[in-house]
Length: 253
Image (cartoon, rainbow, N blue to C red; front, side, top):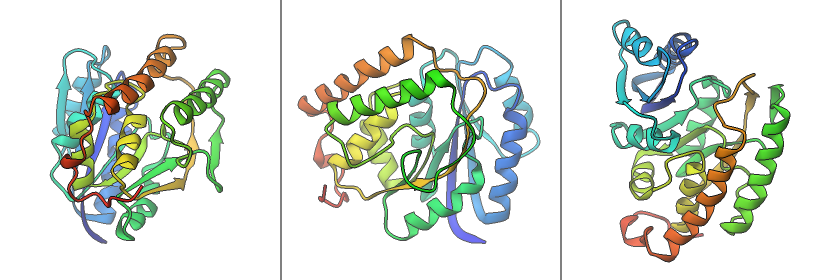
């Protein structure tokens, strides 16, 4: 059993149909592989029964709940969860378990090998896809990837947007304390800050089962993500990501 202690953050928006079984899967896996862990579910203003499901789960097994009465965005949900976490390794993953929790041990191994964060990637060798991505999502993902690389001048990291990332807690809290993007482009900001401060990043292939439905809105969210990339660039020019806030960064880009 892994001696590391881990905090697992689950952002939730309208996940009422599956959140109970998925948190139970996460809990079983963590119980079998970690002596100490916590699960933090962040309800991001869900319009269905997600909150009541989380409250019912919390009566059955240890679960911390952070509730946003109004939808604030996935980035804000993940940020609040990470800043409320308490253990030396912290991760977040999507509530639909598109990337199964069983992938976690390979990511933990990279943290133990000296990386500051290990991130899931769809653009490195050995990716396994169990269910193909929706056609329009695939187009959106590829366009955004090119824009992200060009606007943020980050050509080394192949994929910032997979919802499965594992951090040293000290790294995560310094990065997220500076983060400003609340919606889907928040991952790009997190990786931009990590690269700026010289943190060691490892991209790992995963098994991916794309959900048949998506909470991404066809037109509004890609537009929001596009403008968020320029917001990140502007933040950097304005000094919103100051080096002095990351004293243990490696200083190596």
